[in-house]
Length: 146
Ligand SMILES: [Zn+2]
Image (cartoon, rainbow, N blue to C red):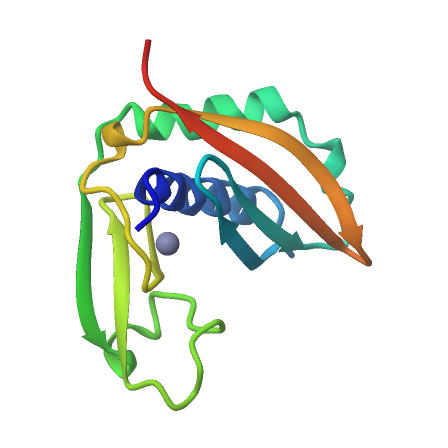
């Protein structure tokens, strides 16, 4: 596991949930995590470059500061498909690993995460770039709390 991956991953879930709530047609696509930054792409007909980066960042950090516990569980796909978006899970998969940020968001993910949002630190959105037709890439990093 890369040093900051759990923090970046968990921050990415929070950002994705906020974008999906704000932009009705937004769908989370490709994600990638490097040593010190991460990126996530969204598909949307809206121009996501018009979003206010500072405002979004504040919304993510507001959730982080709630110190929400993060629960990981393995569930039968049929059991959770009503409450969790399974579009990114292949059809052949029967059991899914659910990452549950308590009271905020649940989504399937197989990667490492932190146990509480307060471990993420400060979430910083570096840029929003258009990378294709209706595709926008958000680059972000996390920094320790001062
Ligand atoms: Zn994840």
